[in-house]
Length: 449
Image (cartoon, rainbow, N blue to C red; front, side):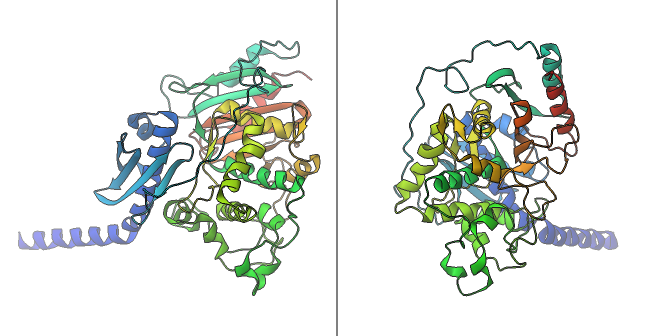
């Protein structure tokens, strides 16, 4: 009996040590992700806690978190085994922000000035309901089948699509939502937000207020090898800065999103690992650094806040969109853009028409071409904060397709040769699970050339 007890104690000690070395360091990130997800989903899209936990947060390890919502205080908290409690606050107009213990919640804050698009036009160029339009070359039965097949049936979890919106020749030809979601549901685009950030630079470039080919205006880089890195290198994810983005472990990206007060500074502080324009690799830190650089272009915080909405987002009627901030007040341009699927499709339409929105040139045509031109060393799969099909990632889709892409399978696909924009929102990645090539192929084949 004594030997058994000693063995049991040894096993428990080993188990505790294993937990300490493998799981405990992750608890802060787990509860951080969960608290932020709950606060955003509940306060921005009115989702009940149960729905968030069953859909947004049913991710391995994240589902360990215990969550609570304080509706009166406008915040959510999460912890794991009662440890590492994290808190995310909600502020109307700014969305949710994951905070640390030192954050002063009583401190006054600025709100972006918003202008709602009111022109009495039907969607997509206005916010009225779309007009019924029938195209003789569209096989609507085949289109419906392709869209329906992208959704689960009878409560399954194989595909996990939440919304599909299809625009063809500026008209809505297909739209469908999963149970619990509708045309007014705000859905997180995750890394599709990167394309919004890039577009903000495009607007600034059109206004002649920035030259992306000049070295990035970062004082801390001027005495080392980083001084030659340009904004163009950053937009192309080709800066050569050290970075690790691997969401299966604790890495630069996870520490930035769920621990950093100033997310743009995380990448800014990294050393040069390669010469610019020689090694392409994906970095959410780079995009948040771009947002930080964009902030430095304005004299005041209010101007920075207003620019994103007044010069771009609200200009094309994406009135549902909220880009959330980090604790320092910088937009999390890598990951935290929320909007309805219809409004995400408007963003795709802007690029489909080479930066022109219903007669107004928001972006120069040259910027859109720049966006969709393959980055050096990316093997045809990446442009300027947009993904590309130039390398044939999706074999049954035209090579001219370029697209916004986000975690858990968010997509705004822009196909100029077909005059088409396709939006898919969900909680299932491409591999394994959702067949994006088959999904896009089915919709494309419903339209006869």
